[in-house]
Image 1 (tube, helix red, strand yellow):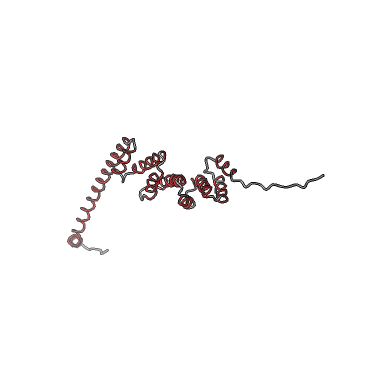
Image 2: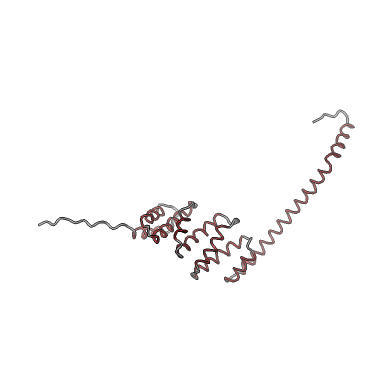
Length: 209
């Protein structure tokens, strides 16, 4: 930085600087203020949209209303919950193909949290098992999952492998499920594992007089 010897030199330097950069500074201030007020407007709009979505979701009771809600508020977080509810309704009605489509959409959504995706993936695996899409279920259940659901995932994998006819792999899956601290229905899984136990070969003892 230059050192100015007199007050006049300092004043002239400030004037020169302002002539050179004054327009840019004013433009920056205007843009900055516009950004602040624009961001506040965006925030207010977001809050209003979220409130409207929440109110509409609370009023959506039956299947038709939920479908309408998903269509109208597809970008809101409530739309994901609505799709999960719709999928559950379709599962209860035995409409597994429709449920699978809804759950797959949730899994592939770019705006859904990982925890919600995990829930949807587990439900999708169950649906795929129910509708006989065993390869799809097994492929996903053998992929990466959070440790918090590892027991449930291994148990589902065992179920799919049993239906596939691979009892050896199913036993391994059930055993891994039982070793997981996250498993909640260990007693049921133990029963399934026991049902797959290999029969012991009969031992023929020599006949003695």
